Length: 252
Image: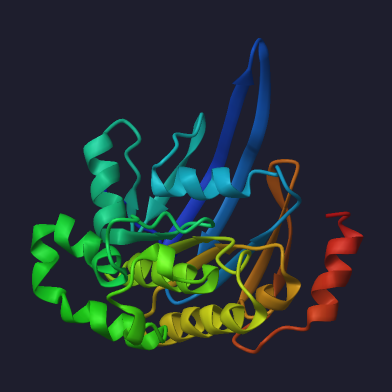
C-alpha cells in the first residue's frame, strides 16, 4: 500500500484536491483539504449536498484518485498508481458502508456479509465472524433471506456488517443512517460506537443528521471544498442544539 510513513493518526489526509470536468469546464470539489482521525476515534463530516463528502471518502478508499495531496492509513501512504495496492487496502485495512447498500441480490444476507472474507482466501478461517456480526446488528434471524426480502433498514444493517467483517482499521460510512427509520439509525450508531470503543477501529462517517452526528467524538464541517471548522465532543454524546447552531453559523 505504498511506503511506510511515521504518523500518530490512523488516518491522515493532507492537502487533498480533486476536480471533475464538465465539458470544457473544470469543477473543483476538494481544495487542499486536511483531515485526520486517531485509532478508535469516530469522526463525522457534515456539509451541504455537493460539497465533496462522498468524493472525500472515495479518495481515501482508493475508489477515486485525487489530483493532488496524499492519504495515509495506518502509517502507509495510499498508492494511487497501483490498482492492486488499492484493492489490498480495501480488502484488509478499510471497510466501506455505502449509502445505497450495494448488496448482491442473488446472495443471501449471510453470503453478502461473508463475501469480503471469501474473496480474501486468507480470511476464510474467520467465517465465525459473520455470525457474530449478524447477531450484533440483530439480523441473525434473517441471515438466509435475500436482499429483496429485507426492509431498507435491514439492508443497511447487512451492509454495515459486511463493511466490518474483515475487522478493518478504518471504516468509511457514507450516510449510513440516511435511508433508515430512527430506530435503525440508533442501532447503527450504537454498533459504530461499540466498534470504536472495543475494536479501536477509526470511523469516518458522512451524515446530514445532527442527531446522529452527536454520537461522534468530533465533527468536521466541510464547505467550499475544505474543512472550515471542527466541533470536539469527546466520548460523551454531543449537544444536538450546538450542532444545529454551528451549521447555521457556517451557513451549511
